[in-house]
Length: 348
Image (cartoon, rainbow, N blue to C red; front, side, top):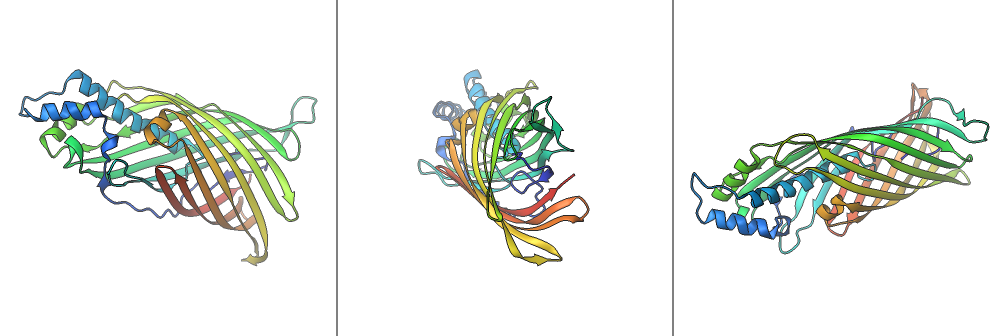
């Protein structure tokens, strides 16, 4: 989320992931993840399965909605600054086991060039550029319900590019409206090993759902100095609206809302490494969601705790202004996540 600093940034939370520790394991798709009517339809089809077995149009539609909602989650999490790279675990509800997936993200953003005066006012502004490339993946054995014995090896690619203007209303207070475009591609990767599974695999027929959408948003940031330390209090909202571009049976696309509130603290240390001053700090953030992403994840609020240790390399290593390590922990009602990565900031 752009602040009022005059720099282009690559941050660990929406940033270059040079090092990402990830845990991947085969787990269980929870029983609650499959719609009840779909289970009933599959059980009926499975009772007379042979080489001519077919799924009804109604069951096909429910399969399309089920996989389409997962495509929406992959695109939004990949593009949103509120979700960092790392490993996530969705807890098993209704007696199911946990579901794990990993999110790898490369991106960043910030203000570009010198400040400009807005008309005859005292307000200054900068052009802002944001962008990210993200890949979400998971391998899960289905061990419950009519699809038990099959495997879901799904993946999602998300490409996001946005631009806008950062208006510095005062030296401390900045408002940044932006608008962007979002491309998503989702591959359900269903491996049918049972009669019911082969019905589902034939129904989606190796479909890949592609979506395109717009992402208008606005962010506000206020800096509060405290001695040598600096607090930055920020809030941001972004809307994700997308539609499917292909003719597959997967009903991808939808609308989602993400609102994040963050308190960030930067602390200069009385130490240096390689003639570069050391900084520490971190942030706490609360993210709220609404729309399709909330319906699919069953968690509309999550919290993030982030810590970091950085070298201030400004003026020493080309355009690089900061280099360090960061780690984050994510908590929600039905999922948790964590990541460790390298933070790289540039100032142009």
